[in-house]
Amino acid sequence: MRFISIIMGSKSDYEVMKECANVLEKFGVQYEMIISSAHRSPHRTKTYVVDAEKKGAKVFICAAGMAAHLAGVVASLTTKPVVGVPMKGGFMDGMDALLSTVQMPAGMPVATVAVGKAGAVNAAYLAMQILAIDDDELKVKLEEDRIAKAKKVEADSSEIEVLL
Image (cartoon, rainbow, N blue to C red):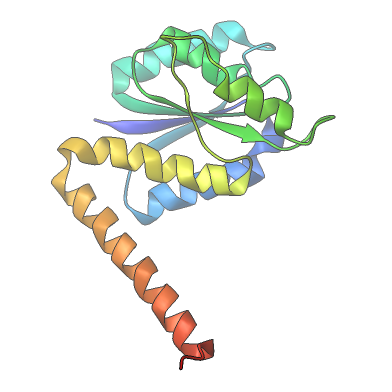
């Protein structure tokens, strides 16, 4: 079995991260979703990452706010790709989480996407693109999705465009 693991630092992240899960479901990609904190439950985080890898996790998506160390901690526990989703909130409304997620030391990469809902959606797409490297069926689904998005832009434009 292969799947994508979604880990969020607290239950308050769920409303945003369910968008990530919705995208994976739309494409028929299996996932697990749990809450585990780098600071409040470090043993749970480590145990989960080790066990998830053994079960077939191929990519880890980690969402956290404020200090946002979850993605970095997970990256320290695995050589699988880790995608960080910085969450809004706190004193800096997500900027602190963005900087904490993206500023990783050399050799400990975390692919970082946008703050909040756009990041949750893009994390799902990035994780699927990683899986599609050796999954032709998923690759075709992603290509078809891109074509549909382009057609929607053209259709939306045709409703309002003014050309000379």
